[in-house]
Image (cartoon, rainbow, N blue to C red; front, side):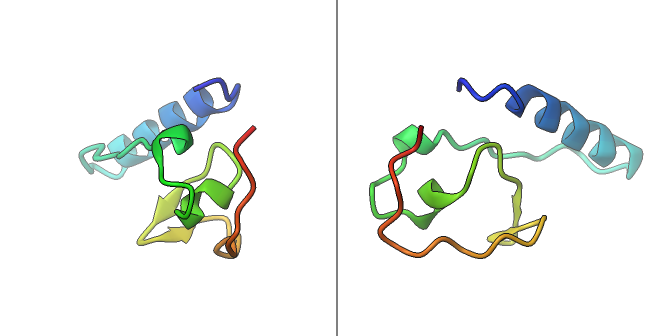
Length: 69
């Protein structure tokens, strides 16, 4: 919550999946609810992960990760 780009990314992903005739099966994760040691907290928001990889090629964050802002 609070990221100005989240709604845009979500709607574009849903539309892309619809155009590919795929059911929009998304899992939204609030970074604030993840344990401190979870490396997903180190990604910027919003981030799209597929098969535990960032679709835009960002490297997996290395612990310790900064607190989300």
